[in-house]
Image (cartoon, rainbow, N blue to C red):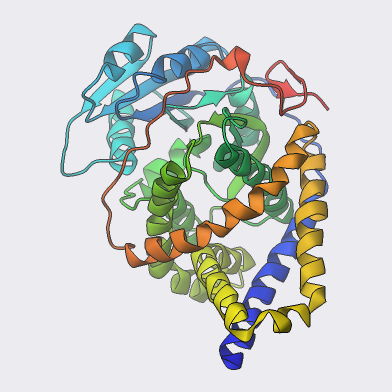
Length: 411
């Protein structure tokens, strides 16, 4: 038991220390000029399955972006819909592709279908921006992405925010985790020149890259698979901290469990197929970004080892834990001080700091999710997350966020 305990602790310590060092590079933001002349032409793609309650507000939001209307078009792929999603999207001005294929269901296939239709149109788009039907978007989104494209970036992830952060303790916990991830992982890796993580929505993909390498994603985490495929071809995902997209989060633990289980199924599936390749290529080409990409892929195993660590701690007895008070101090410091620094850097309102109380409880629920996801990693059956929070983009809750102006948060 002691051998298992110490082996687990070594792995967890090394993994945690690595990410702590990475996070230090999130303490600064380099100045980036985002107000470059609009010249990139965008195809905005929304994959939707029975989203009649939220799709209309997103399309209205997208039609009101602060970007020349002649330089972007909005497409909705209504994937196996049995409600009024397609009808509402058309009425709001989107170009709608209806797709019916019961064998190949889900976002990866819907995006493949939409991309092929858009490319067949012959319209010379520079990039495709992908959103989920439940999203809302800051009006400066395309302006910021245009600036990143003009700098030569090919795959850009926007800032993932939450549109219903204050609903329940689950949404509060998710909001905190997204804020910390955006600052201490995404921004940090961007500053270091490593590849950032695609989040499935709010992402901008160069048409050149899509046409050269294709989409072809079939896993439950198509975003993770695509970023890994791009990295193996020497293309990094970059980060746009000022391009915000607001995602609707599950209200209950069970709803969140189902969503995260699907993510863990896809994540462990992709990890099993690509970790060794990334390590080999990283060593062969001396490309540390690939090694870092492999480290990112093994996150589910970190969660599972955390579970083993908790179990061995229990078997070794509470006295053994109390004999190592330094670990208790480190845990307290990380939760209430270091994470608090991350929230302060993002200038959240004071009420959000209290939400750190919920965050470690929610974080622990990732452990059983990781085990179930690993056990079901070969199951590619897609499950739909219901959305119903029909918030207008101009009425996004500002209780938890500092004042925003012209689609951007004030400094």
